[in-house]
Image (cartoon, rainbow, N blue to C red):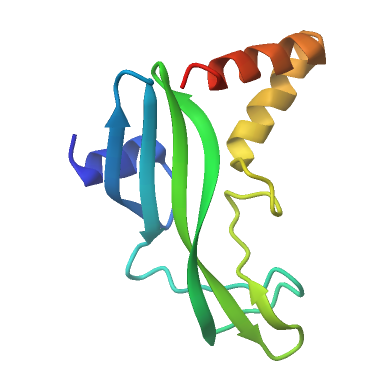
Length: 133
């Protein structure tokens, strides 16, 4: 599959997949993403202000919803911003809740599953799926 196909499958607005790796025996999918060219709207995670000064670039690995039967991990390229109010802070990304090691939609899916099943059962299912690696 081409990177632009993975970009459509991932469906993270403003981001594109530039590398994909499939580990078939372990049933794991890793996608590396970065901002699309025109997406330079950087927001400070501390105060919510728009910031243009980038202090550094780093990668963060987060778990996302499974893609077909593959455990999916997204490696996202992020910026540390030099905010005039807060100092150096990580950028705010809508797809990532705080510093959690999973995406917003993964969090939402687990929360929704917990509404219709016991939290313990959902945790066991999520954990068992993760242990197939």
